[in-house]
Amino acid sequence: PFTFTGIIFTVADLVVLGFVSQYLGTDAMIAYILVDLTVGTTSEFLGGFIEAVSSLGSMAYGAENYFIVGQYVQLATILYTVCQIPCFILWGSFMKEIVLLFGFGEGVADMAAKFVLVCLPLEITEGIHECLMDFLEVVEHELYANMFSCIAAIVEVVLIWVGLHYYDADLVFLGLICLGNSVFFLVLNVMFCIALGWLEKYEAGLIRSFSLKNKPMVKELLKTAAPLAVGSMLAYAEWELLTIFAAVLGEAEVATWGVLGFVWDVFESTTEAFGDAGEVRVSYQLGKGRPELAKLVAYKCMFMGLTMSMVMSTIFLSLSNVLPEFLTTDETIQDMLKMLFPIIALGNVTMSVGMVCWALVGAQLRYPLATAIATLCSFGITLPLGAVFTIVLNYDLKGLTFSVIAGYVMTAMLLSTVLLMSDWEKLSDRIRDKMLANVDEDSSSDDSSSSSSSSSEDEDDDEEEERKNDVHDNLGGEINQKKSEETDMSSDHAMHQAVQEDPHVTSPDRIVNRVVSWWG
Image (cartoon, rainbow, N blue to C red; front, side):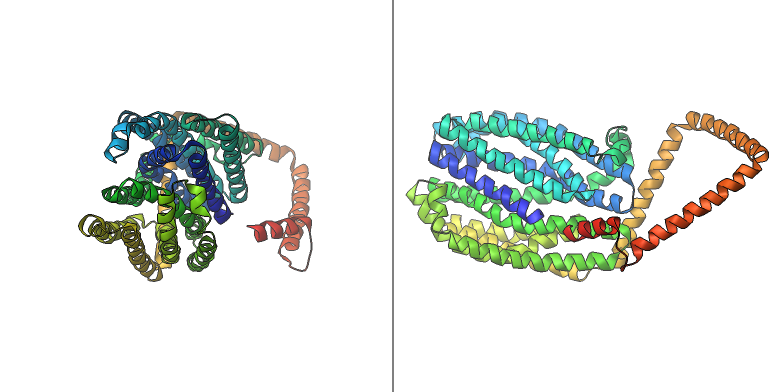
């Protein structure tokens, strides 16, 4: 489900880009790309709060600490929403100047300045929805979450096509369509979760408490989210810096590199899907104290990610003569895209292992190490090579593409080495100790904040105990009868348990469990 959803999302973005180019022209396409590139930088950085829910939430869920799971979701949502407000002011004020710095005209800058005002509320809504989806994946409703996301993405593409084809929509109207679709499906998703009862176990932490008061949990989330945020922003900013290098070569190169970014996202989606799925399951198994299963899941994700990247590269190469004509009407950009597509397809195979290993090392709560390796390869290999090829040698976009591939190859080698040398037993013990510490700190804070109410409850418990003793003295015969009934019930429960555990006995519950386990 993760892979299918990732492909649907990125292909939908690619199709929307093609619609914008075909219906609104090259200038509108460039404005659309530059807004997505700049706004995406801060959204990727703040997305570290949301990504932390996958790892920390899975560990807490594995330790059966449902209160902390709900608090992680609430805290990530609050921090992401609040921090997006200054970003709204920043990009809304300087978007036009940024586009002009890339060397494009006033028309493109004006379109981008108007379009960004709609994109920023859209980013907030999509971030909140992504946090809810990560929560559903953590609590083992990933099939529903992925199906719901796919339906929302497909509906959005259809609405955009209708708006462009029948109503001559501009970029602002296109953004309003996306915003309305995102809000609608967010509200619908929340209603479904409430109706199905999936939030009941987590309501105490999700809506009946204020997560910012839990200082140890806030510290843990920030400690985990900080390297995630920095790593995601650096990866995204890396492409933006390479876009600046492309601006040295010319305006057509900037547009081509921007379109290439959407194509690259399609490749990344497949490997990120295996990384996301592996991150959830590895964190869960480590939180459960099953290091051998966690290691097995990690190795399988690496193998499946590599295999899937080869399949995607083959499919992509077969479409290399069709995609450029759909993505743009400019023949110069089409020619450059056709020239770069084979190099990207080759680089995708080397990139996949690095992307999966980054998520798996993070699932071990070693995000600082994973981020440090990725940052070192980015600023030590990719960006210097890109600067030399464009600014010094004045080489074409092949040099930038080679720089990205070289950086990913080194990242994959280092992260896979870290993963293969991991002490899984020690990592599992450390994660379980940390989750248990969160339980103790949470219970102690609850006891200190409700001392008066607990004392009154103790008095009520004493009175209840006295009443029970009176009943025991006066109704001894009835108690013995109840004990015999309880014995019968326990024997029935034992028989039911034996039915569940006996592989040769068929029961409705066992069949349902088998189907759910197989499908998952």
